[in-house]
Image (tube, rainbow, N blue to C red):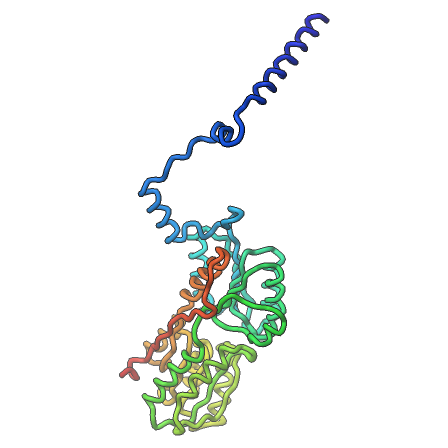
Length: 352
């Protein structure tokens, strides 16, 4: 028993000495110097390396405040569109390189606005850091944008815009639109057609999904360049689908046997129009102009099946939109509108 008591007393004495030592530890700046190793000053090479890392976007995938990996929700209009497929590939490669968690989703077809709303609301509930998306409709999504605003999630648009007046009325906002100047893209094709075929003739147009402002702007930009020698006989939406454009073009050919020109507001519809024209035995008789610059459309242009297409830059849209979202998250100011370029691909038989 005595040995046990002696052992307890020794232990108590040891704890007491440790407490006294703690009381004598240096305070204030001296304490900090005791607990932390002295920082080695950065050399000029170190500073240059830091600047290069920043320029390369090496830190862009990490939230500066929390140090956690950024997560960005990215939604396009249609799952099976070649155009949006290019956006998806570019976005995934970009985010992998930058160390960003990308959640990429899309509706099955461009008319499925309800599904796109579900996708965006899932992004909001899951707490993504930012949302980048191509709107399927210019009004129906605006209440969802307001929900993202209320959750403190910045929104960047790409490929298409919203009805700003309606969005503002609902108290919503977005930081930037990144994509084609839609009217100017249509204008590029209209100017080419007017110059190449000044004699004109009957023309019909195939539109995108109703409620998508890009479709309206593209058709208006195209048609506004045509002189009075062109007779505008019909405009019908084909919902950016090849099969619908095929059917609508068949109706055009029946109703207007003297039809000379078709402008389609996207390449999928342009290729549907080409198929209907070929089946009717009118290849080479009707000029068809598309818009997007998808690989199969460009191949059809080179083969002389499709007269021309206005080529967009979907990969550039995706990466620039992501750059913009990251800039917003870093507290930087961004431009409200950032346009990406368009060019023309013209059939060798029609090139100047």
